[in-house]
Image (cartoon, rainbow, N blue to C red; front, side, top):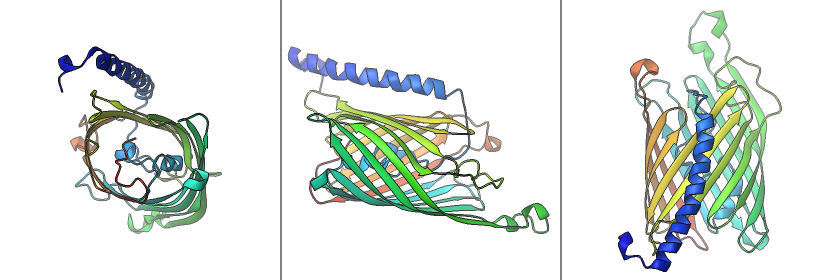
Length: 323
């Protein structure tokens, strides 16, 4: 579609949509500009690139945005080609409870980094309260179990500093809050609320076992008069004591609700290209993330591959979920 073919009333609607979108982008950019002064290369808890298509593992209130039930899996491999590099597997299932404007589900997360391994499984319940015709305020509660293992003894046999392995199991609780409509959302969450640290000097003690506060936002608007092309801007920021801020800002174009092409920038200097496709009740996504500099890891680019697969069923399953 060419802009010169848009009628005056259509142009007014088009410009109004992009005025709103521009405000959202400017706001997200201001947040990012503050965060980028704190560069960090540490792996963040449950960090993944395609958060804009499935935020539920980080904020379970997001599940309320979908009227259909769904099952999703994600596989992520960082620093491809480096032995012991981080890899992540996430599974989540969601079931709406429409009679009470709620949802319930399950999340399973497996993270591996060198000799350290973490498994997390929890169930969640989310409930929304309707504030106006199309605006809602939602809260969620997560509860489950997680385990942590570090096989240090195999690192340097005979070295007393690595003589003992570490194994710990503990309950996990979390919560989320989200304000949303059919066009946008703002969320705050703590997926795993910790009341103490492990007390062990390890990479994951400084990262995984501290409270991570997530701030999220997204806006979905039309990029053409007919609504065949939609654009979504999304942002995700992570805050944790002792770990510098990390933020992602992304923009995605959706063509007829099927093909999605996007780009994501992380404040640690990483850029990602994202492609997704909705075919019937299935969603397939792939992202390739890489460092914009080669001054880390001895000049090795930190390439990351991520694949997602989702299946939706029940009411509304064949209507693409874009927000």
